[in-house]
Every structure is written in C-alpha cells, then in structure tokens.
Image 1: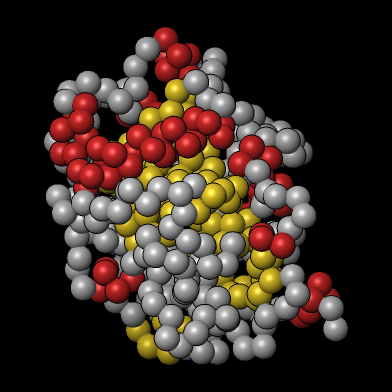
Image 2: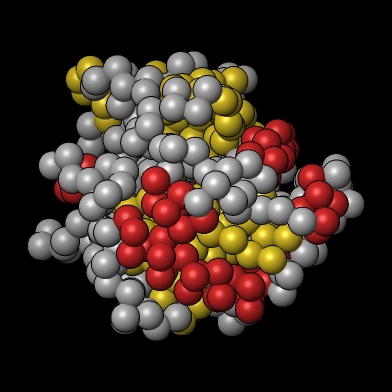
Amino acid sequence: MRLRRLLLYAAPPATVAVGMAFGPSLGPKQAAPSNASPPMPQPIDCSVHEEGVEARFNYQDVSVKALSTRRDGSSSDGHLIGANWNPQRVLVRDGRREKKPRTLDANGFAMLADAKPQHSEYYDERAVVGDYYAACEELVKRVSGASLVVAFDHNVRCDTGKAWGRRLRGGNRVQGAAALVHNDYTADSASRRLAMLTQPPTLLKESLRAKYGTTPLLRGPAVDDAIAGKRRYAFVNVWRPISTVESKPIGCIDATTVSSDELVTLTVHHADEGTDGGIYFASHRPAHKWFYYPAMTPDEVLLIKQWDSHGGMARGDAADKGHATFTLHSAFADPTTMPTARDRESIEVRLVLIY
C-alpha cells in the first residue's frame, strides 16, 4: 500500500489533557508534573518509507480555543492552562529528497549549507552574542534581501542538559526540545516584540547591554515605518545543530498548507518583563505537509520564519501562496533513531528583519 494511502488510516486520536503522560500506545500512563509540557510521543514501528517517515506530533484538540502560561526570567514556561493535547500520526517528508527545495519566502523555511567551525562556544552567552549573532545577521541578510537584520535572542536546547540544570555561561538555562506544534509569534505578539526592540535592552539581558549599552537594538526611520505598517518586517530563527542530529530532529509544516482555522493562541505572561507575548498552537489538519532534514550537521542551518508582515495571512489573504507568514514546527521522535544515538543539541538565534 502506498504511503499516501497509509496516511488515510492514521492512528485514532488520543486526546490527552495536560498533566498526563503518554505511554507507548499514547494512552494515559501516569500523572506528570503540573508544569510539564507534553512528552514527545513514542516513535512508530515500521514507519520508514520512500518519501520519509511517519511520526506523531502533539497538536491541540479542536475544542481548545485559548491557552496561557507564565514564563520566568530563564525562558522556562510554567503550567499550560487550557491545553488539551491530541497527538496525530503524519508523514514527515525527507526534504533532502525533494527536487524543488523549500524556500523561506514561499514555504516559510529553508535548509542551507553554512559552515561556521570557528563558532564553537555555543554554551557561552557572551561569545554567542558577541560573535555568532553577527554571523547569523550576515547570513539572513544575504538570503532574505532585507535592508536591516538584527539578532536579539537565542536558546540552546538539549533534553539532557535541561535535566541536569545546565546553564549557558553568563546566560539562561538550557531548554529541552520543543515537542509541540507551534509558532513563536502571533499577529499581536509580533508587532509588540517589534515595538519592544526599539527600547533599550533590559537589565535582565546583560549580554545585550554589554554589546549595545542603553542603545535600542532598533531605531531610525525604516523602523518607524515598519511599526506604522508602511514597511515590511519579519522574524526569522536560525536553527543550527551543535552536533550532528542523531535524535529528535525538527520538522516544519509547509506554510502553504496552513490556514487560520486551525490556529489557537497561547498567551505568555513574561514574569520578568511584566509584559504579555503570544505564540500559535494548532489543531490537526489533514492537508498539513511536514518536512525535515535528517542528520543535519553543525555546518547546516535551518531558517524558520516566525512572522512576516508581508505574508498572506498577515494581510488577510489566506489564499496568497507566494509569501509565507509563519511556519508551524516541532521536534519529533524519528523512527530511524538508533538506541545508541546521542541527545540532540541545537542553538536557535532569533532575528528581526526590516525590508
């Protein structure tokens, strides 16, 4: 039976309220800590095919209308109030086998070769902000054609490092792989973040203050025009493996297969800044087309669009397939992962673009 037909017979949904852990069959197993995000669903047996692999992703149930959480100064989230997880089995296509590569502008993500062996201190906050930010800015400016590109934040992710309570030298805690279908911004939170970047870095962002002092990261007429809606702006993440990915790769949904109907907003209360942000979660839609790039190396990066004011959905034209607005994405359990595979380590740098 061909894989496209197999997908019509997806595993029956297992709707699990937050606070429950999944067993191998995705049924409730035991209570999880109240502040836990959902665990990554188990890999699916016999799910490797010519086009890619099958995996389960943590979607929200269609009954969910809104969620909220509190984020502390180390970028860790608390209890997800209102969450109702509904894992779904989907095909994740191997992007390396695609004849037509996905692009940042049209599809919302792109994988690129980008050898940066000189940047090895990813666990040092000041080294990342002082050197690696500039490398990411140069790369994204070249690829996007934006006139201004500024890096302003980053995370290092490794489940083992998180379990050990590891911190970046001079920075935040190491975070775990985000095994839930989401996008980092919403229409409201993207515009708020843009405005916030015109203010001086907060005392909590010591590494940014060391670099910029009290000077805002964004300023000038072009920025004013972007805030006023007269100029295009965007947010893009540069996602890079710190070591070759042997487990928990990241998958992205082609933005042309996403509609506003399946989106649900998570309001994020930032305890350190006294502000509210927001991200998108999503319910499952059979039309979603997932892609990933197996065994990514430190000499490769995945550019992931988090918001584009020129995108079709941002302008109220969901039918505009020429400009992606954002990219839903998630880590997942790759069924080809070997028992001896090392835990995934990655760094993602967030950048703002003004066109």
